[in-house]
Amino acid sequence: MTGHEFTLELLHRNPLQCLEVLRMSRESFVWLCAHFRVNYTLKDSKHVSVEEKMVMFLMMISHNQRYVIIKRRFQHSKQTIHKFFHEVLEKMLLFAHDIIVPTSFNPNPNIPGHNRRLRRVFKGAVGALDGTLIHAVVPANKRDLYRCGGKGDCYQNVLAICDFNMMFTFVVAGWEGIAHDSRILSEALANPHAPFPLPPPDKYYLCDAAYVNIRGFMAPYRNVRYWLGDFRRRRALTNKEKFM
Image (cartoon, rainbow, N blue to C red; front, side):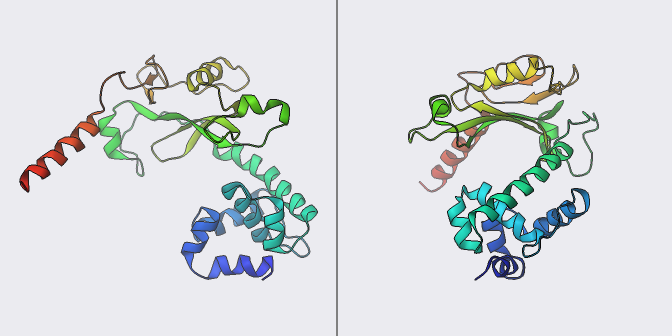
């Protein structure tokens, strides 16, 4: 099966297969390709369509696939795979600048589409902040800084903020895997080249225990059990007593 045939199968067969392979729905994938055609001048090549280029790119970044695997799957040379991957990556960086934008800090909690239940529980919250480890391939002389976890793999520690619509509003990438979350935040706050979207005085971001409770950031109290865990534990005990 050629790469063109494989792409057509993803788009016209079982929609679950598209979700598993590309990590997005078929409708989202079609919209993404059309958006890149119109707004970022991503074009069909002589033998490879925009859709096939995008499938190769998404399979590589979502499943950490090597060039040799994509080469066999799509029946293209490694040079061709490399060329199209970086072509899509260049457009994707432009897309990131357009899609990852600071929130407007709109004080209206009833904006359509926003999670109203969380808005009621966390009044004044404008989003959530956290760090995540993303697998990375780094030069040999820097692997000790990026290596973490039991298997010795290398990771970047990426700080991200999202709003109640699950839209990213700020991202800091490139930090070593061993860097602490709170250090990345403090450096991001002091970086003049990438202004941090600080919330207004009466607003705040939700964050976990890796961060400190300061103005604009609400972290859970240390050494205190989460109320949700207590609720689930009590409910389980109540259900157990019903059957005793």
